[in-house]
Length: 117
Image 1 (cartoon, helix red, strand yellow):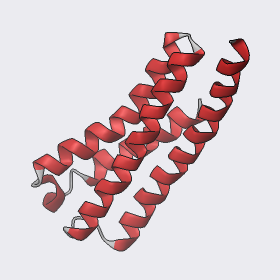
Image 2 (cartoon, rainbow, N blue to C red):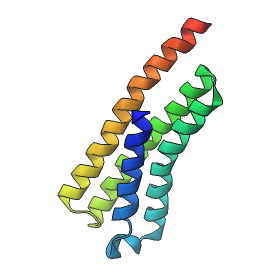
Image 3 (cartoon, rainbow, N blue to C red):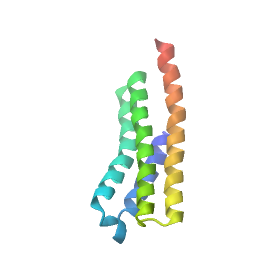
Image 4 (cartoon, rainbow, N blue to C red):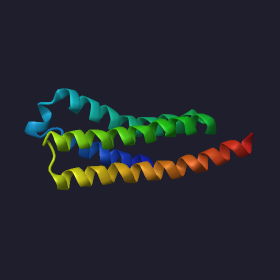
């Protein structure tokens, strides 16, 4: 699934950037942004594995919300000067792309769910 694959790349990038010397010292932000980015992948996978369109849709809603959380946290990292503008833009754009893809899938799953009712 492309949304899971792109979420994985985002997660890998977040983990990489949070290992840098200055960023890694803010353990609370590191923990929160890592958990949010991991949540994206996990919710896509768990929702898919549940087997019901209704549950999959709900897990996609949560995954999309976690994309917003990641975007918010990269703003905090920019404001605290853990990220430069180019890194911020790259990560923000990646999270936005994942969110859009999940949003599209969410609409498809919702249609399938509603048609089955």
